[in-house]
Image 1 (cartoon, rainbow, N blue to C red):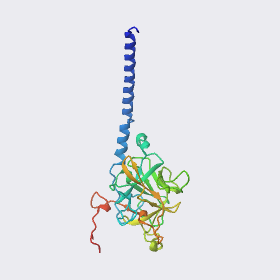
Image 2 (cartoon, helix red, strand yellow):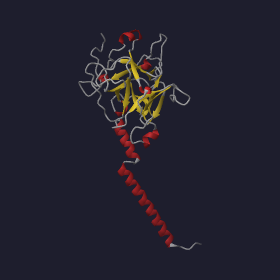
Image 3 (cartoon, rainbow, N blue to C red):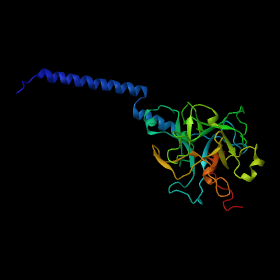
Image 4 (tube, rainbow, N blue to C red):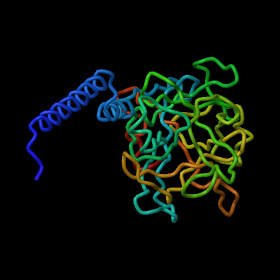
Length: 287
């Protein structure tokens, strides 16, 4: 039988006490630097879900420098409507789980998705950027290139909506079609243009200002494929169920874009704190 040794017990107690003190010092140091996991998540949520004021369209058109939402409008008549995918959806930043736990700001590359949140917050608002030298405040015209940037509610950095041709290693996870993502570099991959909805009138409207809060087609300039929400591909994210956003032009039997490619560039309602999609229809019964 081993002899009782009080020195061993005292030594173990001192070692445990030193380890506990080290852990406490490490905890306090991380807390003071804002590096605790709960602090990172809280800060990320605070910025991504922070209310953002959209720009007011004074003349009914969208302009360079405007802060807007990109909304995929509801289409109740769609026969391909997937359960739970009906209603308005907005384009938003989609962070992978590992980014949520490690990032202190947005990191490129970053994903995007379509979400049911239609209130303007950090993660679903974008700035319309000039890529051809046009001045802030000038209206964007049909066929003119522009960029879409977001900071996600943070002060910086700004990330830019981009896409590129599908390859063996680069494609959308669910549909396996052309991927849409956010990058930190402005290039030919981040250029977009608005196209008039009615194909029979596109030549006539080419070069005309793009109206705000109206349905348009948004096309990626480099690949000539249109931004789309198929609505039948979804994934579970930190914020809940969200829908895949891709670049793919869906054409019907008449070679006309389907509603999956429809977008509304939403601006603020000048009469209150809401958006123009919240504004009641002045002619609810139609004309």
